[in-house]
Length: 203
Image 1 (cartoon, rainbow, N blue to C red):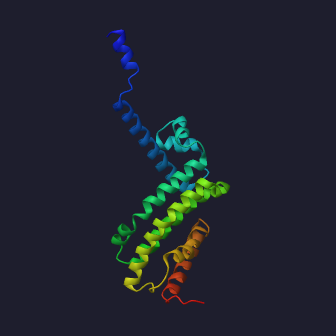
Image 2 (cartoon, rainbow, N blue to C red):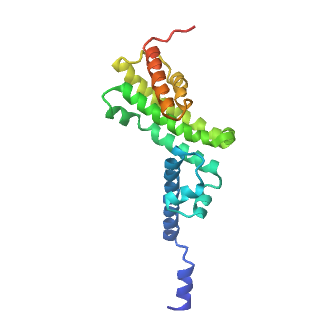
Image 3 (spheres, rainbow, N blue to C red):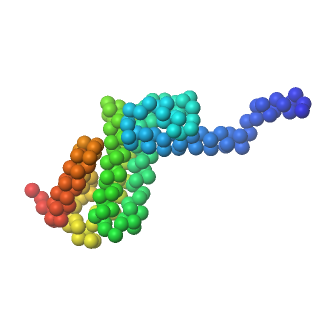
């Protein structure tokens, strides 16, 4: 090979090369977020080295995509919420009861919000607030589908605002994250559905 040819090989900057690199970077980013989702679900304080190991990437690659723990937690939360908000129809189709679908969907949401709480003080940062605000509309739309299905089967009375129901169901990510908390959550869910059978009345 000539020196010119060798030099061209070593400095190849063709669009196809850049495209391959971008695809690899995108795959790495998704792998890191998926690994973070799995590990943060158990422990939001898990070392980032463990996340990189689970994702099959080096620490340098992880930090290029997510310079801080907060960046990664926020990305994992955003990814999870985006994925969850488009599953309302699928969850409803999988259950014979709209009430069961409603409960499963909210329990999944609560697990994702627990990950978000791993942000600690950074939860109040501008970046975190922007992601949280952006997730509100699609989350409310998904809950509206679940509520409509419950109204149709008679487990929720008509007239309840989906945004109010999200606030009402927020106890799920406040109860203890253990067996006792799960049992308490199920008792509270029963109380919530008992109340939602009533038509809302202004005070």
